[in-house]
Image 1 (cartoon, one colour):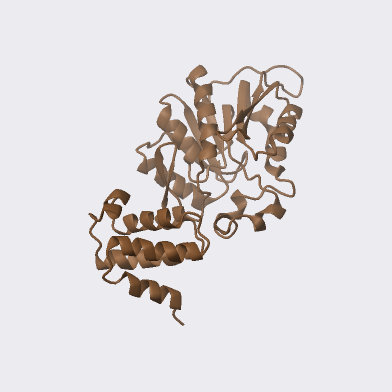
Image 2 (cartoon, rainbow, N blue to C red):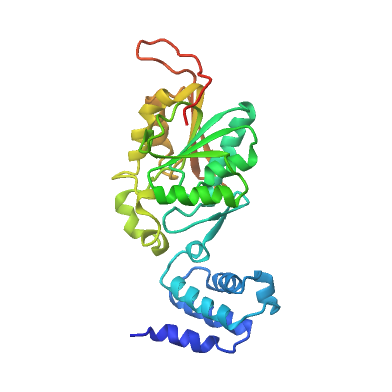
Length: 317
């Protein structure tokens, strides 16, 4: 049976000027509990018309019948609380535009702190070898590549679908061959390309939401974003506990790990890193003053015999 509310939207859109189109859609979205209904309505109409939001608001955009049909479909999807980024198929991150689908986590502004901290590290280590663990859309690795001509980057993910999107983003951003993408479960390769090797820097935005918190998140997150990129176990710390003990086997001497954390996890993640051999810890706060990123530094890489290994000059990718 046709959705009556969608039929009403379609009738309202026929022959309507942009202002009315936006007002009608905003009212529908507001009733569905959308936080910024008018902004979303304007943004979707601009996308449907393949135009700018300014042109739509000013009435300069050409709104064809096809555009109206697209708009109707977009409104229906947003009313179901599908994230705007998935509807548009794109999301801006670190001043770059990334393709996103429901196969990858939507990049968020707080994750830009990971990129900024990584670029500071690379300024001091210009030929740094960097691993982005759990790359998803490739946002962190590709933002680093776009802002550093010398860093050598490898990015891993357990999802082949996510890696396909990351590779498309590499092409989309004009960064061919800047990042090597590997199918891997954390540091364990799933492809047939051999071990990952060792790095000067590890960066990651791992899943860190407690299992019992996911159902209470906004529907845009709990219903649509990939659970594997969200759920961090019973206390949200599962991936940190898994990765940290392996860092000394994968980081070169004086290497660092830069990881995003939930605002309430910085102390716990810092302790996990310290127990794994980190010699110094720095917690970076976001613009709201909340602890958001943990930077763990490792002065040396110790072998099982207790001796310090020198930095290798090759990286297996």
